[in-house]
Image (cartoon, one colour):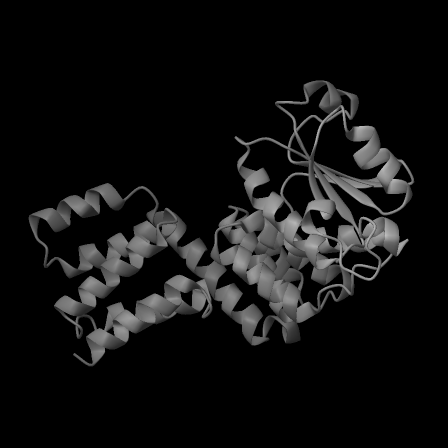
Amino acid sequence: MDFLLNGGQPGSPAAAGDLIKDGSIETFVEDVLEASATVPVIVDFWAPWCGPCKTLGPTLERLVKEAKGAVRLVKIDVDKNQELAAQMRVQSIPAVYGFVGGRPVDGFAGAQPESQVKAFIQRLTGGAAGQGPTVAELLAEAQGQLNEGQNELALQIYQQILSDDENNGPALAGTIRCLIKLGHAQGARQMIDSLPPELQAQSDVAAAVKALELAEKSAGASGAAAGLRAKLEANPNDHQARFDLSAALVAEGQNEQAVDELLELYRRDRNWNEEAAKKQLLTLFEAFGHADPLTVDARKRLSSLMFS
């Protein structure tokens, strides 16, 4: 087995070229069907123009390398291999199949979070590729996806955690935030209302509830931004208009611009309306989440203004 995996050099790790190949319909039998009799083979159908493929492909390659010979990867460009893609009934890309013993035994379509790709490889290799990610690692990955605006991928990870622990506070909070960002505020509200009081009181969940309340409160301000900007052009010191503009921007999902307006209001008159700008900024920070990159950056900017 080692001799076959290592290309005839027993005891040495398989080279990356042996583990990852560009395949075609001409090499499919050798690279996939025959090779999978010895070691599981992942087949990734992709195309250079496919955005999700550019995200998934590097993740697959890195995880295959980390598996150190427990699995191989064959990449198929569908533009160059349309007949093969048709034979495999590929309808959308990326499309990934796992072959064992010359036949497909598992697969998925579309971009997936790294944790689910790891789980796919572990199923394919029977665990030979290593242990699955810890809950802490899953939460960190989900937060990263959320920070990057990959809300659907983040939601998948949070749901994966909740399938094993339905009372996991950070995962519940993350799910609520994902639903809000995906425009499902009503679903978020139903989820919150179904939670027992002790879970609603958990710090992560309570902060997510604040985010929903902010979204619900700001909903009525949607569409008002243009008129408020006109007011500010006429009078840049119309503090109420700037404060209201921030709320309208939150309602439209323009959180960065909303923060900018509040910081500008604080810079112009920090004591206006009993420090309303600062108080609203702190509310936004809690609603966005303390780990959100916008919160981190805005806190630094606020501190700079406070001590200038």
